[in-house]
Amino acid sequence: MMNRRQFLTMAAMSAAALALPTRTLFAAAQPHVVVLGGGVGGATFAKYLKLADANIRVTVIEKNRIYIRPYGSTEVITGHIGMRDLEVTYDDFAKKYGINFIFDTVTGGDLDKKVLRLSGGKEVAYDKLVVSPGIEVMYDKVAGYSETIANTQIPSGWIPGNQTQLLADQLKAMPQGGTFVMVAPPNPYRCPPGPYERLALVTEWCAKHNPTAKIIGLDPKNEFVTDKNMLLGWNRLYNFNIPEEFMKGMPSDVKHHMVPSQLEWIRAKDGGKVKSIDAKTKTVTFEGGSIKADVLNIIPPQRVGKIAQDLGLSDDKGWCPVNLTDFASNHFKDVYVLGDATHGGMAPKSGFSANSQAKVTAMAVIDALAGREPNENPVWENTCYALAGSDYGLFVADVFRLKEGNVMYRVNPDRYPSLHQTPAQIRLGAVYQQTWMRAFTQDCFA
Ligand SMILES: Cc1cc2nc3c(=O)[nH]c(=O)nc-3n(C[C@H](O)[C@H](O)[C@H](O)COP(=O)(O)OP(=O)(O)OC[C@H]3O[C@@H](n4cnc5c(N)ncnc54)[C@H](O)[C@@H]3O)c2cc1C
Image (tube, rainbow, N blue to C red; front, side):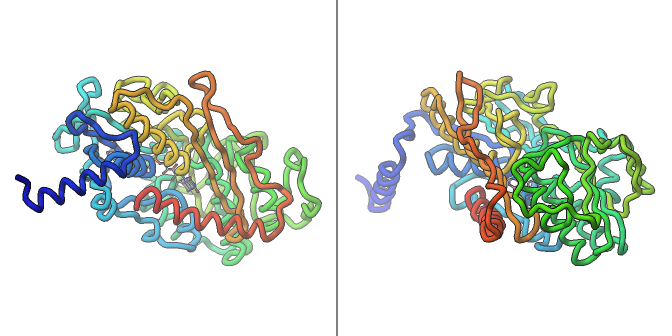
């Protein structure tokens, strides 16, 4: 005989089971899915896996109790928001979806035996492992630079934290007429439009607070995603003269300014590739010369987060190769890799991409646990919003699919907003950037 409580529990479970999508319902014992990294990719994956099947045991191992979101972090540097505004906590999230969190650092493991090792030596076993550890910033790849220098004198801030605040403080304290130098990274790197948005927002800040300052971007590349839209914004907002090779299709209001812009972009072809820095004097030596900066911000080359290298998931290019159908690792069975960590086909290293990949892979893991093949023809999306100024928004938007099994291609022919947008459309682009950030954080972490 069932008592009333048991009956109600059974009834609730049956109702929940009926409400679940058809991909669910396991006869087998509760499988254990472990997620390494509770950032954008890891948190989204854990949430969507639980939404698809509440019966799966999900454990997220994350080294920080508070996630500091990288997206939007340049707005701290220009004082639009504070560091606290970047913080995301996990308590409500964990409770709401029934996700187990272990706040510890994964220090290694044996992926043939399906175990991870934590900092205290404890081991965590899994049936399926999803790895989304983000990036490692290779400070030492810039001669004269190091992590210690980045933490104390010359911040990078590409992984947000104390360096982000240090850079904000340095910009505020920069003498009138001072020089801000930002060193852009080589491809591939986290957030392709990000360095150029940073140059723009720092220039906007200086136009108000330090109008005789100079902002210089040193770049080992000659172009970047969203370049035409961004350069048009720079032309309109900061008197920046657009290089001739970007002029095709530009609207007729583009001006050739006689007054020099506060903002200068020195590309690879103009000698923008950095050779070394002297941390004591904040002097950067690059192929085209040298500059002594008052504030120096270096965004070094990047590769996958260290733990993925230690676990043997990465290749000699520094990223994790995956089967693009489901983002299963090419190196280990029952392991999936998401987000910035992967080669990811054509998808950029963005939060939007990590979130989209996580949702597709959650369904693939559900299928794998049920002994089914993954969907052969998944669809991923990405939109990277960026600001040329607080009220000047732009974006690159993509939809990706697969052909010939493992080749990602872009479905949409147009990726960028028209260069002929009205001022209202441009202003709305900035509103969308802000609202996206809020809705996106909800989608990943709430
Ligand atoms: C300035 C800037 C602006 C950006 N703007 C945008 C934007 O507008 N739009 C956009 O889509 N993207 C943007 N991004 C990029 C976006 O933030 C990243 O692409 C996204 O965070 C990647 O998600 P992820 O899961 O791969 O890594 P992360 O979000 O970095 O998560 C990795 C997690 O793994 C944890 N971890 C790592 N190693 C271990 C370990 N050994 N043990 C336990 N935990 C570990 C980390 O603590 C972290 O929480 C921006 C980035 C920057 C720097």
